[in-house]
Image (cartoon, protein in one colour):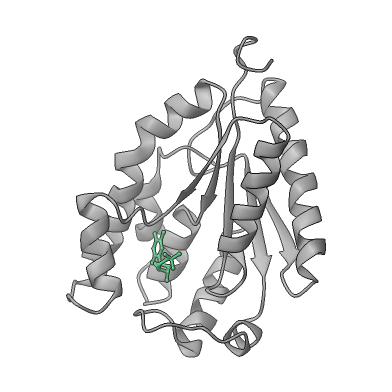
Length: 212
Ligand code: FDM
C-alpha cells in the first residue's frame, strides 16, 4: 500500500480552452482512479469557495471590475492559499486531479497583453505538476460546441489569443491530447497517462516547484 511505504501522490493538471472537455474528463478520471482503489481528490482553480475565490467569481461574472494585474494576482493568491494543503495531501499519498492551474493563469492574463514573464513571476514556488494534460480543441471547434456562457472570457476572439499563449507554455510535463477524438478515446488516453504518472511518483520521483 502506497501510504505505508510513504510514497507520494501525483499532481495531475488538466488544461485547455473553455469547452475543451476538461471538467468532464477530470470527473471521469477521478471516478476511474477511485474505482481502482487509488486515493485521489478532484480540485479546480479558481477555487471559488474562499474569500479570494469569491472576488474572482464576481469579476468573472462581470459584477465587478478589476485592473488586469490585480485580477492576475488574485488568481495566483487563490493557488497560494491552497499550496500547503496541496503539499500535505501529496506527501500523504493522495493524488490531486486539478481542473486548471498556473498555465491558465499565465495564458489568460497574457492574452490581455500582459508580459508573460511578469505573469509567471507570482507562480514561482507553487508545486509543479507531475503531468499536464492539455486537451487540444481549436477555438473555432470549441465555440461550435456551444455552451459559452456569459462569463467574461467566453468569446471566440479572446479564446484565440489564449490558445496562442498556451502553445508557448508547453514544457516537459505536458501531454497534448486531441480533444476532438471520441470521448471514450480521450478518456482512455488520459487514464494511461495518469497511471504511468502515478507509478513514477510512487517510485520516488521528487516533488518540484514551478517553473520547470
Ligand atoms: N482563469 C482561470 C484565469 O484567467 N486565470 C487563472 O489562473 C485560472 C485558474 O477563469 F475563463 C480563467 C479561465 C476561465 C475562468 O474558469 C474560469 P472555469 O474553469 O470556467 O471555472
